[in-house]
Image (cartoon, rainbow, N blue to C red; front, side, top):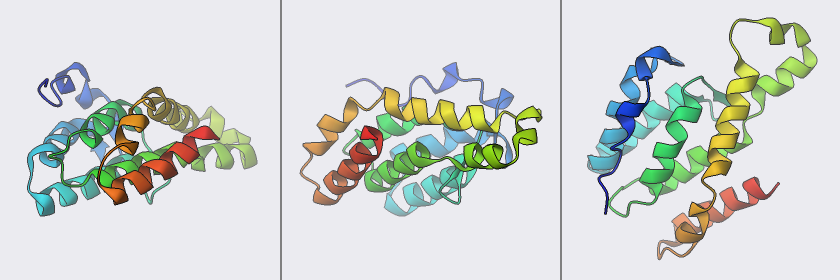
Amino acid sequence: MATPLRNLERVSWGEIKDSKGSAEAIPFLLNTVAWGDAATARAALQDLRERICQFGFVVEQATAATVPFLWELAELPQVTCRVQIIQLLRDIAEARQWERTAAAYPKLLNRRENWVGWEREARQAVRAHRGTLQHLLAEPDTELVRVTAELATTLAD
């Protein structure tokens, strides 16, 4: 098996933003999710969630770049918070906060930040890896299978 997260350095994390500013902390958080014990991994995933999908529906510029790594982690049996990763991916796939806001307030589309574009890119990133669903639906962990089925339903819309 290939080394997990080996492509993290291909993303210019310092040039993109998450909810706290620079996205430079994201590689550290992803590695902590991958290699940390259960409590440490969950804490890192919670911090990551707040940075890329605040409140479960507000995505950031760094979200789309982070999604492929979340899929990678969700496939690794040694990762202790796979269920929560799939739930985060579902939240990202369902995110439409900026799209709905821009529909009501079109002037927001003229802002420097491309919030609507970030949302679309993040949703596309989740969809781009939906081939992973079949593998996850075959897992012995019933909770993982349940949340994966929910994500599959979301992606089928």
